[in-house]
Amino acid sequence: MTTADESRTARPPAAAKLTSAVPGQRRPEADGSGGGAESPPLDVVGIGVGPFNLSLAALAHGIPGLRTAFYEQRQGFHWHPGMLIEGATLQVPFLADLVTLADPASPWSFLSFLKAQDRLFPFYFAERFHIERTEYDAYCRWVCEGLDSLHFGHRVDAVRWDPQAALFEVDFTRQDADGPSAQGRSYARNLVVGVGTAPHVPEPLRSLASSVGAGAPVIHSSDYLDHRQRLLEAGHVTVVGSGQSGAEVFLDLLRRRPAGREGLHWITRSAAFAPMEYSKLGLEHFTPDYTSYFHGLPEPVRDRLVPRQWQLHKAVDHDTLAAVHDELYHRTLGGGWPDAVLTPGVAVRTAGRIGATRVELHLEHTEQDVRTRLATDAVVLATGYRERPLGGVLASLEPWLRRDASERIRVDEHYRLVTDRSVSGSVYVQNAERHTHGVGAPDLGLAAHRSAVILNSLTGEERYRLPRRTAFTTFGLRPEGALANGSPGVAEQADRQHADFRPLRMT
Image (cartoon, rainbow, N blue to C red):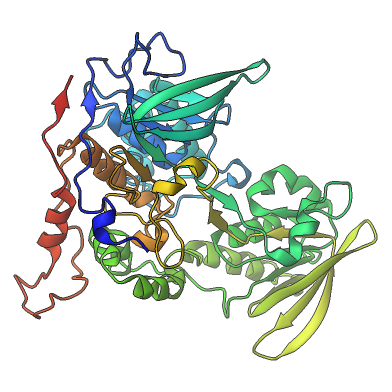
């Protein structure tokens, strides 16, 4: 393990040297590369363009002189296209857009999107606090169209630290949708890695899910809409997983299959099809106050907390559970009973194919200690997502990265990787820090605040004013047990977020 004096946890970051380039004005380098004799290095290179780095790009656009480029290997923005089920809504209010909770006056807010489309009054009368996912996706694509710092069709291949130049070298491949590829390189003082998450397939089902052919489909819920017609044509479909995705897939299939011949089975390891914790005080676990509190806890305590907080983010919202029950109840009005089975407490131990058209799941009910087999014509795995490993793109930085006792990357309170003191540039991460920042890491509601923290840190100034208190709940006590205005530690947490600022150096 590296001691504190060997790492850069306590050292303020190098302030970004900003240029006179005007954000939003397209530069001669179509891909945003910088660093040659004709172009100074970039202040920030973002790797990946999902909602979190898109939030950062939108807020960075409001900082004069900040030179940025964001690279994404996909040809365009499309947020979870396989789960944009008709009528499905976000689980967070529309205020959890890309910018509002950091800068309500930003031109990239959801309300600005509505205004640009002349839909502000219809939205006002609709009185909707939770918008549909398709609308959120359209909003994000609208923001993408207005930011020229985004470069789609650019795959980042490698990142290196050049100690002589004190810059990161970023190698990328530019791939046109229907054309040739080209190699490029950018130079940057700071990096922000937001490569997102990948669908998780449990080990017993990986070989089935990876096989391609005309047999019984075994798919992850992230690809649901691409396979929905095949699933509707299957005689029997099994949905595995009891989170929000599992509930939405089950409900959508239930609504589209004939009464009395639904042929559906929904199973989960969880002890119940549980509702998400959505009380007002419970939601305060998704505030900067709780994030700061969690980050300050000892590593073993954090590791014990995260699994115990599953109902804060892995369960199903009340409306979806109610809709499932309502649909099942409606199908009993004719005197029959729907051909739909919901079984909690069941784990899939092994699985295999029966010929070319069926799948057999070997199930175990842990409470009963009973094992059985289930034959089905199709399987949808609503088994969640996992953080993408950063080792690939950051492999060459490994000698400088500092890790915790479990060999995970160490992330400071400003979302910056802890590196050797010799590295003057900063590498920030988005949605790769649940082990250090808690359950709010993947939550859209904290996206704008996290982006503001990162931008304040890398520029060395409070470009975005951060609130000193965000929750009525007081998380933790001072060691001496003294209470200051009934709110121990809140001011100290806010002060700590501002402790790394340096005057911004303009060049």
